[in-house]
Length: 303
Image (cartoon, rainbow, N blue to C red; front, side, top):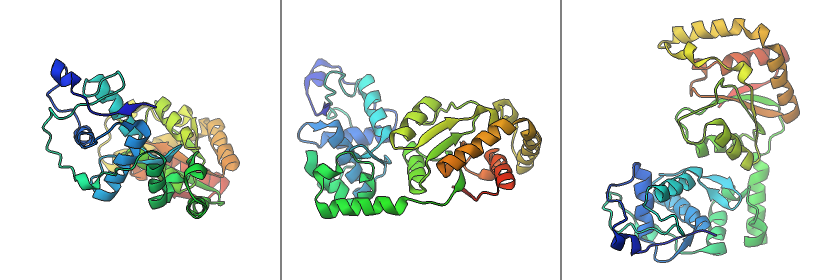
């Protein structure tokens, strides 16, 4: 298992970059690691950062329930970036942050000192939601704590068929995934024409990997998308309304894709139509949703 710790080798060799990392959250991460006295595994580092952010109010990262509990995909990505940029060495991923002077105040007393299964157990007991996808909960928890986790998981299970819609604008990938999990969405239906995003976690390959790693299926239906060139001049609600009226007229040529979408709803019970815009009134997913509600009389909800 990969470890992260401090070393003077790079400082002595003059290999440590002086310029701070690009993002404040990365500066925070290195500042926090500065105060860790011993090596820490990748899993432990996730849990230490999780507890610190949850209990200190410095929420630089969001987390999802994952294989070993609370996990941030953005945190894992930042570690890779910091290694690539020289803030951590590629060999054993050792970090020496003392040379840096960041304006990130760290409450040392709030840094969890436990490691290994004891650390994971503390996370699960304090925040049982983050243990619902754990593969080791039975190993690290006692009977009472395990029952609590299972009770939280049961509360999330819904049986009513619902067609949801959701936009990822303004959301981290972890916040987005938590919304899906907390609404018991079993399948994410991506209705973007081109499922590419500059926002971390939302391009097709990465998005599919992330949602399927927490038990949610992913399907891309590009036939239901709108070409990006048609969105370039949108400024007012009237512009959006005109575009969606035009798009609605094309639905008669998309019946195969629409029937497929409804078949996904029937077989998976709770699915979400996904696109970019936060406001459903500014997104064509609402036109798709309204069509399916009208033709198949299903319940719908915007997230």
